Image (cartoon, rainbow, N blue to C red):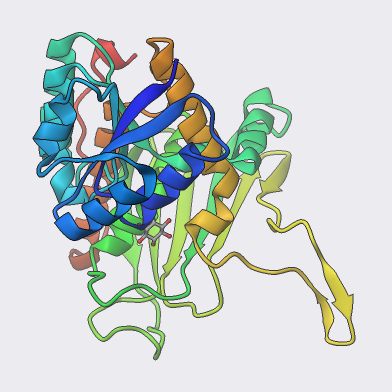
Length: 334
Ligand code: ISE
C-alpha cells in the first residue's frame, strides 16, 4: 500500500521532504499540495504530478489524502493540525508544533477528544544516529548520573525576518526537545545570558546568547545559540556524567590531510547535517501510519517544548531565572 500524503506549505523543508519521499523513502507519495503562495503550490505540484488545493482545509479533507505533512511556518500550524484531528488524519507537523504553549494545549485537548494519537511533531534529532547512541549509553547507566550538558547550535547566518524570540522558539527548541528526550525529564527553569554581540549580527538580534535550563533533578543544560557564526551549521553536545562524558563527534566521514592542514568539512545547513535523521524520521512515520500506529514525538512533546520556549522568551527580557509553567502530563500521553 502507498500512503497518499498531502503537503501543506512546501517551502524549503517541505520540498526536501518531498524529494526524500519520492527517492529514498518507501511506502509514500505526495499526491496533493497547498500553500498560501499559489504559484509555489502550482509549481511544486506540477513537478510531482500532484493535485493543487486552494486552501489547506480542502487538502486535509480530500478523499485521496490519507495523511498530512505540515511544513508551513509555526503560527499557521494550529488551525491545520486541528483540522487534521477533526478529519481523523495522521499529521507530521514541522517544529514548532505551535509558537506558544496555550495553542499546544488546544491541540492536546482536541486530540484527546478524538481518542487517537494523530499528531507527530517533526523533532528530527531524536532520529539522529549519534544522539541515539548517546542516549543508549546514558540509559545503560555505565557513566552514572548525568550532571550537566553543554550544547551549541550555530548557523552561518539567518534571514532578515528572523526575530529575537526565534533564537529560542525556532532554534533552541531543537535542543529543548532533544534534551527532554535524552534526559527523560522536564525542565523547570530558564535563564538567558547575553554575551558580547558579534559585530556581524543583524542590528535587532542578541547574537550569540546562552540559554541555561535546569531539569527537575537539577541537571544543568547550557545552549549557546549563535545564528550568525558565518562558518557553518555547527551542532555540538557534550554530556557530563559522574564517571565520564559523551559528545557528538564531528559528522563528516572524510578527513583531508594536505599542505593546508588536517580537516573535515562542516555542514552548511540542517538538511546537510541531519540528512539521515530526516530520512529515518519520515520513513518511520510513513511505516507507522500505514500500520495504524503512532511514532515520534507527540503533541505533549510539542506542548512541553513550547512551555520551555515561553519561559526562555520571557528570560530574553526579564533578568534572572524564569520558572517553566506546565500542566501535569495527561494519561493519554503516558
Ligand atoms: C530553522 O528553522 C531550523 O530548524 C534549523 O535547524 C535551525 O538551525 C535554525 O536556527 C532554524 O531557524
